[in-house]
Image 1: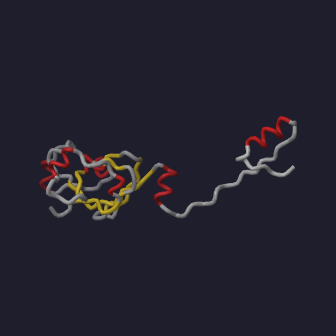
Image 2: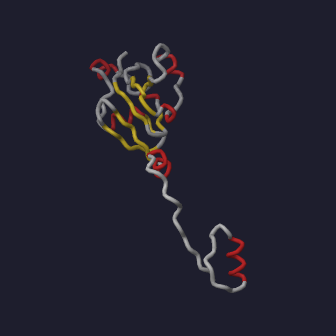
Image 3: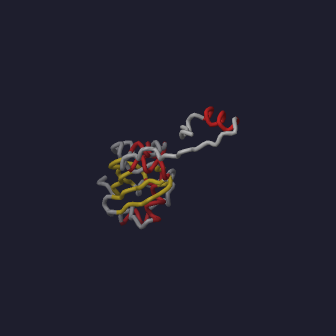
Length: 144
């Protein structure tokens, strides 16, 4: 008997109903290109690249940018920011970062960010208010 196409379930059912054996060939789909975004979709994992620190962090979608930076030893704060930061509540503005690539993979600016960053470029975000849903490249401690 000739191999059957798995997509043709009616043909398989008919053959089994008639008591015929069914040979099924499983083939892998054509491989995708080495595109990191496609790989990201398959694994559910993305990367945050911190330019100044030359460090890449792998994370699950929906992670908080500040938390992932601190968890991986990335220094977000200037000297004064280290002493006076609000602990991630969006009140001080000391965790300011610049998004170099991947803005589309971030949560929208919060109301807090809109108030704190109204005179800053759209690429500036508060790390504590930013949820990351895909790969991004970040510059810490941008020029104010």
